[in-house]
Image (tube, rainbow, N blue to C red):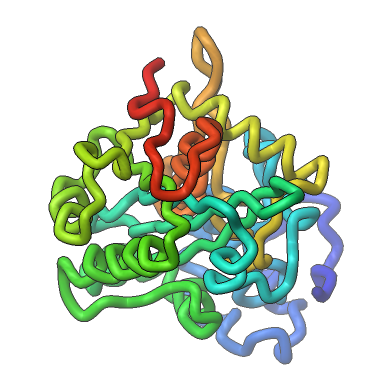
Amino acid sequence: MKSVPFPVSGPRPWSEITSEAPAETNPEMRSSAACGMVMRSSAAAAVALIASQHFNVQVGMSLRADGWAGAHYWSRGVEPGLSLDGVLARSEAVVVGIDGGGLDDLLGIAVLGREKGTKAHLAWTHALISPEGLERRKANTGVYERFQADGDLTVVEELPDDISAVTEIVEKVKVAKKLAGVGVDAIGIGGIVDALAKIGVTQENNLLAGVRQGISLMGAIKTVERKLVDGSFKHGGQALMTWCAGNARIVPTPTGMRIARDDSGYGKIDPLMALFNASALMATNPMAQKRPEVRLFFA
């Protein structure tokens, strides 16, 4: 990772900064499009996006004072090369979290396993986006292209191909006889529930649970934070999730806190929320092919 090639002692005109930046970092830095994006938005997400694309600053570095605490310790959980197959092979039970899917969002899926013996949590995540989502957030094109190249983001040709892809992942876990439950937003997309029913994942057979959002996820959020610090949470170090973790911000409430994305809408967190959904389900200590003890999470 390269350091920023100019002093940062105080505010400076954008034109002055770009004139001093070495051309070899990214020649497109001087383009009107790049300058325009920063001038249109002062949000931390936009600044981080420009930094990652043009100065080789790590994608997802948190620039926010109100950022999620877990983002600061995300790198502690990195286990390079941890794949979906690896999670399935090493886990005694696996839960799946799903979140997002709006036209402006990613559809995130998180596969979270409880490792045999150690009981550590092993996470693998993926995201999908529709052509409409790409069109609506053109400013994110650079990071999305990187995530595609990494194999962590799939651009589907049309809807509902994203739901079909997520269903295939759930079915893979089920066929491996490791599935202990699927947690979805309690007020999420009905199409996901319908698609999962076709592969035998329903509330009636105790494999599908609605996970309440907002402050109801506070326990799952804190669980992930603590496990990152104590070393019992492992993930593959995907740039996608590093970005999402850095985009998350904490919103205090009268009775606790909740996670939200930046108001600008550029910094997506859907795969991270999918992880929290999975963590909430894993907290019930479910066993593969058996009913999670808590089916619905209330505030």
